Length: 288
Image (cartoon, rainbow, N blue to C red; front, side, top):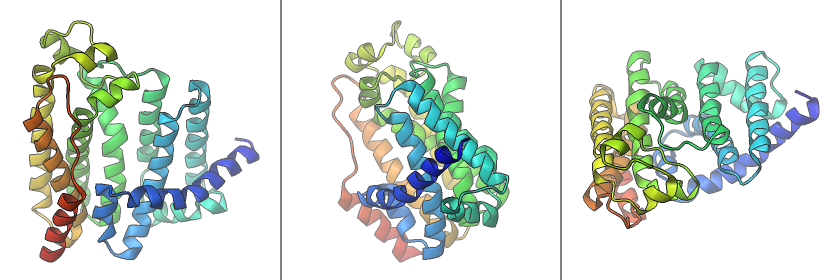
């Protein structure tokens, strides 16, 4: 990478910290869950979140496909340089977190690869294995980074990241069906759509379709992952798992509202209220 390109990435990362804080503060469940952690731990986690937010913003931007792929490649090279000991000074904080917690390079690259899946070709009705790979890259890999900072033992941390990451991402997919379709994306797997009688699952078709039958399989999968994640968290001290517990609780509440609403068109937007989120945080805070 040319030095001016690396500087551009670094300056973007540095400037993005303030933007990240603003985005986090906008009543996101992630921000609220992490807000109750000790300051040093919270700061480390925000470094990871800032990286993830930036590559996600690249994937969802209105820039050309070539430009977005180029930006993601620059991040891929920057991460490789960081692990080779050549991090730019503005990435020192991220480098410190990586070395302190022995975070794996493969997990950072997986996040970038997941964003690239959205850029290279719009995901439209993938097969089940492709959807699972996507969930692993954009959600579980982030979890694998975060559980190390939270201090969750390796085996359970890995399993928690895999189950909770899939539960949250499947919930996002179920929540954002129409929004994703507007962006030309359909994350519902083709086999279950065909099984539900939707033979031509284009984004425009999905927006107008009643898809309760097609969503049933993802609902079952998401519920199973929530159960598995809860069982893992129950084995550990509350202070260690309080942040993922809040995330799981708030997302399960959202998931439950989606299931109650159903997936017949037209689908009303489903969101959790700020009051509901604050009550959840208060509950876990008082019991911690």
